[in-house]
Length: 249
Image (tube, rainbow, N blue to C red):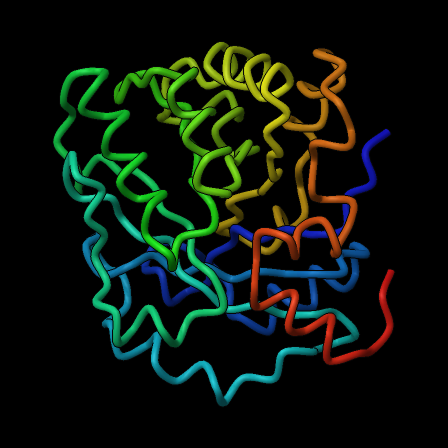
């Protein structure tokens, strides 16, 4: 059974289409035994998302609340086939980490090769540590190239529990994840499980993702959710937090 102590893809009211405050999400995480919570508001190209100025004031928020570690990042939008993202460097510098994702309102689907290039371009950005929900058949990708790119650029691929919800708008997520995870197992590429919670009830809810990994007998050592130290190999800010001391689960 995979030990699961973190959730690094969640949203608050600031994202425009989520339903709880930062402190409500933190309290929910603490009640569920989550040890590390990441809040990643949508970047500005998503309709209703926060202004870029939101991302330059994270210094005022404590990084430990209600007994859990807190990281504040952004879910960036991939905009084109070169992997351009929608925050300028002055804002990226203020993030603890970043997820880069393809979202329908912000990206025009290309060929499989073009969509794959979009992800690879985002991976090359030094501010991007996670590729979010690369699972939607509306934006087909070459999964072998994607997985090998993640290994080359030292980026985590996300298994998004929200994508596996029966009501998700993302298409064929289960089938696409099976393909991606088989390749991750073959090439020894780590993944991260995330809830993509837009409501406090879903914080830390990786049940659908965990069930899929167990069905596939996916190697536990390739899932970073069970170890802050393993996740820190991909997240420099987390490494700095751990180096600064304090209790570890």
